Image (cartoon, rainbow, N blue to C red; front, top):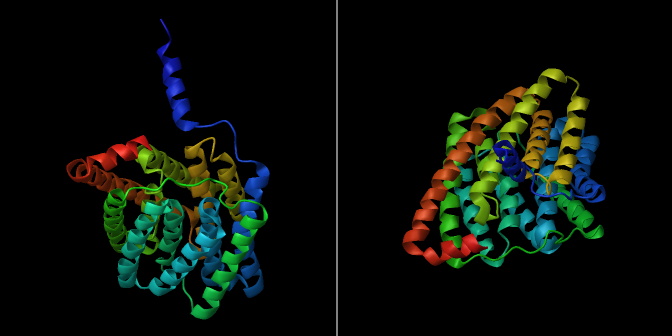
Length: 339
């Protein structure tokens, strides 16, 4: 008889490891250059006090600009990033405005899915959620937006210069019926996550909508499987970060961990989605902790709670969406499963 433990192990291996070819080091290094150089220059120019406002604004421009360019090219990426920046400044420090802007952006992102642009639109929405955090403040919106645009230009320039534009290939457009239902559910999820996060998760309530958008990223045909991997990776990353907070004290070392973990996350993405999500979570948590001068273990612990809440919310909305499709548009559901 075959050993059942072998089959069991192979199942776990297939779930944890999806490929054998990691991202080339050069590709990953170029991506890190696009993401990290703008905030570093801003902080070096304006001093450590600028981390919470100008430095974070530079990062929030560079991140969605580069990742959107990988799928949609510089022109479309610039459009998404500029809209995100304006929406971010509009809702900065204003929860009531965020409750209006968030679902509006969610519906816009869903509409983009009709043109095969859901992923870059949702990546921009992901960056917007951090604008809802209380630590991101701006006494000079003009300067903040100017730096935001400069960081976006740098990131898109790097993507174009090194041939990373549209490097990930085109996304398949979704039907209007599917994007309509998805947009409504995503908008509802944004309202719930922003409201509940602000009310029950303290100063880091933005983690709730942030994680909810991560769980909602395409491909939606693999939503449950990918969502589970994202949640597992997020929880693992948060727990590892808590352990690191007990072992590492110097801020410089935390900065090194942030950069290295994000570089390795890009490198590992084609091989293990769980592993890449774990490393990316560590990098983001370390970056946020350094930027906000908040204890890293506090940030990581709050991330555990919001990850679980976002997974529960997404699961409920997915169930509602499947029910709607079965009743109203069963052909759209079958088409999605085949994609």
